[in-house]
Amino acid sequence: MSEARMMISSVQGAFLKFLIQISKAKRVLEIGTFTGYSALCMAEALQGQGSDAKVVTLENDDEFFKVAKENIESSGLGHLIEMKFGDAKETLLNFDNSVKFDLVFIDADKGGYINYYNTVLERNLLSDDGFIFADNALFDGFVSQVPNTKDLSQFPDSAKNMHAFNEYVINDHRTTKILLPCFDGVMLIQKKA
Image 1 (spheres, rainbow, N blue to C red):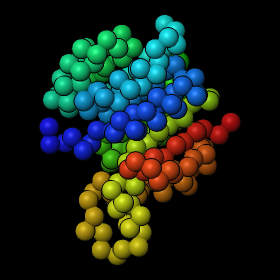
Image 2 (image 1 turned 135 degrees about the vertical axis):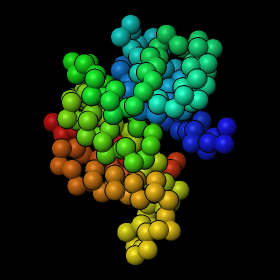
Image 3 (image 1 turned 30 degrees about the horizontal axis):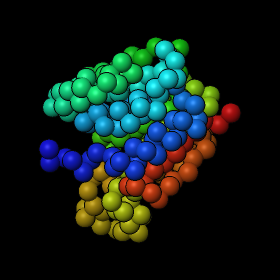
């Protein structure tokens, strides 16, 4: 798969597991399944957390969905993962908002991050103590260069989209947040009480 660089690293998978364990998260929403690796990492952390522990993962690419489904079904952790195929924006709008997620992991199309973020908050899909983990916040280091450059045509659209997302979140008074310069940049976000 030529998109293999899109998959999180094993260290990032361990970091996600660690966050789930220390936060005692039980319900996880993943936007962007890709191969299913990150869903499996998070499901591994949910083992033994009760019958309501679950990763719900959203994917809209046929090929990725098929690969992820095979990986998840053969893992022994499939009972902890619910896969949903389709447009994430539509799927989020159709969620029963009585279900709250303790962690929302966003690792999908970069142009959709602001929409996903707003929909999760506006539909109240995030639990009171929950947090959002937005991956690729620095997008190969390009994001830090965007504000200092007049000719934005030299940057990939994804870098420009991530810059816009970061600026949007930083200026959003509904949340507290921190941008961690690890992996490809991680924006951790929590609703204000």
